[in-house]
Length: 101
Image (cartoon, rainbow, N blue to C red; front, top):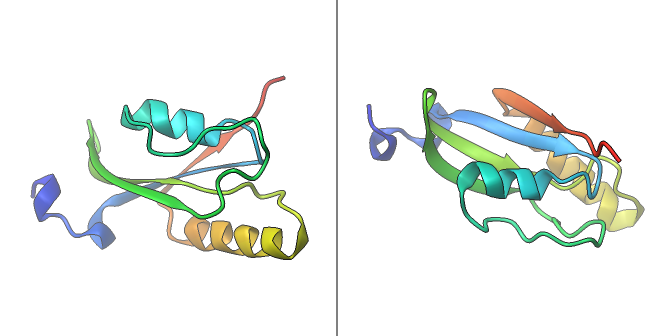
């Protein structure tokens, strides 16, 4: 079954997780080869999960998911963390991004 024939629910879901400003969006942009997610030095730039259906060899059809940070704060931050946990619950492969600095 090709990429266009594979429903989203049957694709391998690859989620990128980590703290705010760890570089998740930069890695997602590098993996997809696109400026899919906005990248900024400001913590909390990614406010909602960002999804990209694509073909990733040798896996085949996948959904790449950029997420807000797990360490967000405040009322809106709690909602972002809740949405990130929802993505984690439907992820087949979780990639943890850690800022080495």
